[in-house]
Image (cartoon, rainbow, N blue to C red; front, top):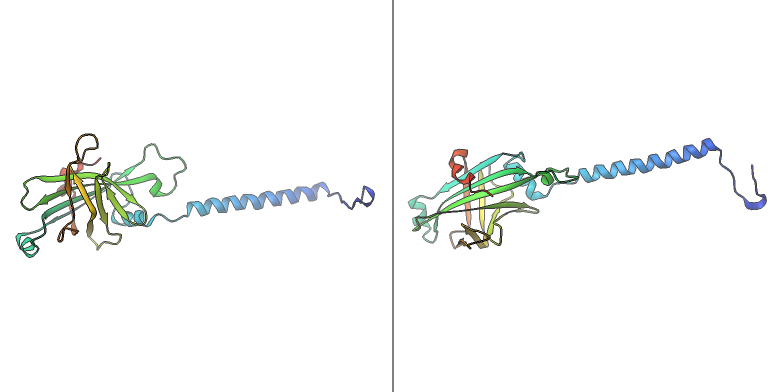
Length: 209
């Protein structure tokens, strides 16, 4: 039927119009579903994936790594001051859970605590903070306390710890003191720590933030 003279407009039958509208809504709904699926399938940051390989992102999980250098090692590297290091990696969960958090990296976070013994220094130095994950793993101390880098693909059963150029502060307190700065030296830059029993890092658990 062609009403309106030469207007050239045709009237759609109600059933045809209803089918057309349903088709449009179905396509739009499918696009939204696909869009949501794409967002939820976005890859995790490489640093988080690497940490998750070291220690699965489950609240309460802990991994202890230690290394003590014997007298022969220290004699072979006379400029190395660090005689022992312990590193505790832990997993926590955001509480309450962030709104719309889907990926593990949005729901869980990693903390660290470490201690250092230095040749000629009777004090056991320690510090703690959070491990930030993006393109790489950076474990930092709050209030500009410096930090360390962790290798993204460490050898099985071990952990590679690299001191940052500006070092890391021990006994660092945001409100009161600057602590003791441990800076990388000629032979104090990269450390390979071995996986150990949780009991070996028991003293560090209370140091975590």
